[in-house]
Image 1: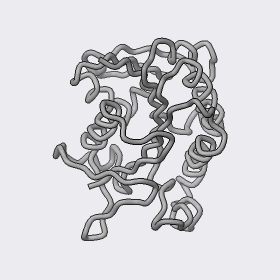
Image 2: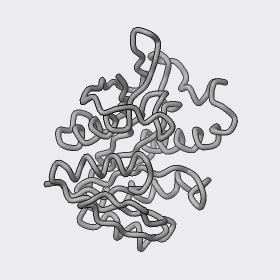
Image 3: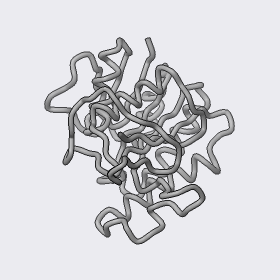
Length: 215
C-alpha cells in the first residue's frame, strides 16, 4: 500500500486518479480548497488553502507520493509555480516522490522542436495557464532539489471533463514529444489517463522526466 496525497483531489483529474488509486488498495488523502459534493469512497478529504505553508506541510507529512493535480486558477493563478516549488522542497526533505499533472501544451510536436506553448496554437483564453504550467515544468528541470524524485505527466490534446471518454484499459506512453494515432488524433479518456498515472506510481519507469499519455 502506498500513501498518496492528491493536491486538487476534488477536480476532474485528481478525482479520477484518487478513485483509481483507492481501487488498488492505496491510502489516498485529498487536499483542496473546497469539499467535493460527491466524495470518492475510501478517500480522505482535507480542505484548506495551499497558499498556507502549514497546510502544505500537513499534505506532505507521511506521504510516499505527493501528486499535484492543481490548475493555476482562482487563488492559485499566478501563484502555482511558487506553490509547487515549495512542494518540491518539502517532498525532497521527506523523501516523497513528487508527481505533477501538467498540460498538453508543455509537450513538443517533434524532438528538439519548441513546446506547443511557445507557438501560436494555444487559444488565448488558455495561454496564461499554459505558460504557468510550463513554468512549473521548467523549474523542475532546472531548479528542483537534486534529491527530488519527480515526474511531470502530460495528457493528450483531447482530454478533460468536456471529453471524458470511456475506460478502455489501454494507453500509450511517451516522453516530451506528443503522441498521435494513425489518424493524427491525440486523445485519452479520464479513466485511462488515471490508469496510466497510477500504473506509473505502482511501477516507476521514469525519474526526473516528462511522461506523455495518449491512445
